[in-house]
Length: 103
Image 1: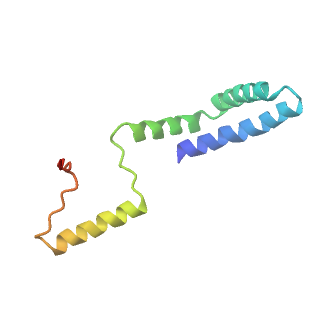
Image 2 (image 1 turned 90 degrees about the vertical axis):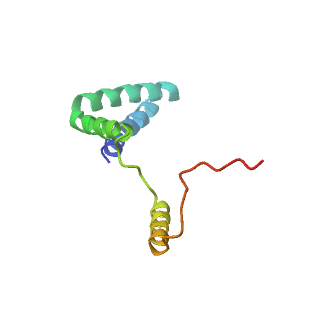
Image 3 (image 1 turned 30 degrees about the vertical axis):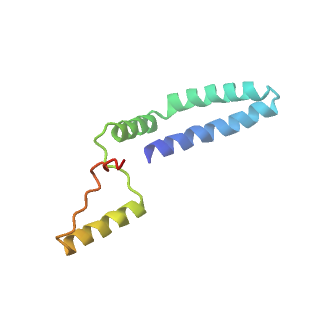
């Protein structure tokens, strides 16, 4: 959530600056460059706490220690599989094994 918040702050800085530079007729490429540089400088100087929180969130997500994100369908499938195994002890689920090649 911190990464999304920081990204939205940077976007909220970039868009008005981009529109301003387009209005000043600097050209589209220069407007992107100028707006990007100024938005970067402002966010770097004034939003350090949000930047640090976003960095910590990204570090946690990509560290390998983060809990995997699962969709509602995956959670429902896992719950159904768990109920099936609990209700029928003779049923074996081996979805972690690789399938054998049938040639």
